Each structure stands twice: as C-alpha cells, then as structure tokens.
Image (cartoon, rainbow, N blue to C red; front, side, top):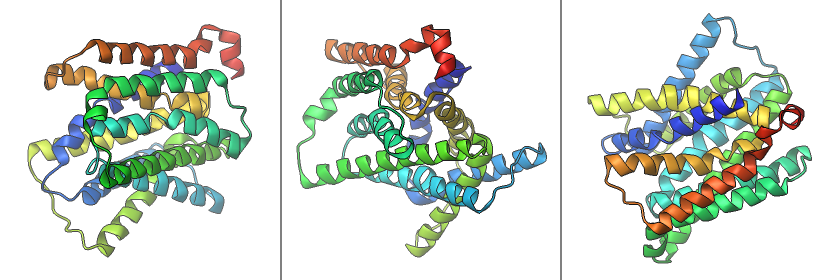
Length: 297
C-alpha cells in the first residue's frame, strides 16, 4: 500500500508542471492558485460530506487545519511561484528536494523523532543528484541579489511545506484522517488566498480556453485532491522524512517527460545525477525489504 501511494504521488506531482505552465499568462498567479484550491476544497469537502466520511472538528482541529491551509495550500505555492520569477525552475527543484532533510529535523523538533542517518544520507544523495541533473541551469545562472531573493523564497516555501507536513502529522495523531484534514485545510488556504488577492487588488480574470480549464481541473483533482491526500497519508504511515523523498523523485519524472515533450537531452553528468537520486532512494527505503521492521515503523 505504501509503495502504491508513493508511486502515485511521484507520478502525479511529476506531471503537474505541464498544467502549471499552461496556466501562466492571462490569470494572475495568486488568483490561479486560489481557483485551484477553492475548486479542490469544495469538491473534496462535498464528496466527503455526501459519503458521510467528513469528520467534525473541534477548535484544536480547526486551528491545525487553518495552519496547514496557510502553510501547505497558500504560502508554499506563493513562495515557489515567486521564486521562479527570479531563478530557473531547476534551482527551485534543488532547494525543494531538501524537504527530506527539513522534515527529519522538524520531526525531531516537533515530535522528538530520532533523526535517521540513513534518511539524511539518502536526502543528501538525492540533493546532489538533482544538482547534477540541473547542472546547466545551476552553472549558467550568475550570483546576484535577485538570485539570492529567489533562493530565499524557495527556501521559505520548503519550510512552509515542511511545516504543513508536521501539522498534518499532528492532525493524524489527533485522529483526523488526511482526506478530512485536506478538505478543511484547502478551504482555509483558499480563503486566505482570496483575502490576499482582494487586499492586493488582483483582477479575478478567468481564461476560458480549453488549455487553462483542463490544466485547472488536473491541478485541482489529481494534483491536489489525489496527490496531497496520497502524500499526507504517507506522512502518517511512513513518517515525514521518508515520505518527503517524493520531492526528489518528481523532478526526475518531469525531466523524463521533458525528454519527449521538449527534447531534453541526457548527458553523462545528468545520468550520474540520476544514479545518485536512485542511490538515495535505496538508502531511504531499503527497510521496505524487511517486513517486520516495516510493520514496526
């Protein structure tokens, strides 16, 4: 079950970049993010209510969902979208891949979970592999004030993502299922985005083209409802640090698709990077081969 959820998350998040690119243009970025999570939240909340599976939350549960909505479905995306205005997406992917390490550190701070040397080593291998995979972008981008701003925003987005993971772990420890938690959190995140858009005077335009509408549906349903529910289920089942290795693998999926869609060419450097990513994956998930340990994790 864990493997299926993991592969599902990697495959979905490895393809959302196509839909995100199709959304750039007519609609302001914060408004597009609002549309995404408002639609995802309404659909997930409605489906859970109709199925009788939507949990009622107490005050603490709502506060946890509010925090998760702010971190995971609002600030996280705003930071990364803004970062790509200053630095190439490859650099952003490299920073985001450090989520495995940040999650391990935060799990220690929040829950007292011991930091696994294997997970840290695997995350370091994955980070090094992504640097090699995106080496042309890394090497060609000059150091500047704008670069530092972009990297700072990407780091802040990664910390928001990691904090959202911790809040989801707290929800699940309090008995809130990931689907219910996401339903409330996405609506909270959408509400915060709406207030922010209104406060900054963002125009609420909508692109009626098939490309934009199709991209919105893909990002809202597979990208958000399915992807985040699968991922946060893994956070509860496997722990935040191991689940976060998805952030290393989905750029690899994106590059694999880019090979056919955009003519990306693999070199010996990028192949070495891919080998390091796979080695890191083995370090993080080698315990899957030991059923007794996996059950105890």
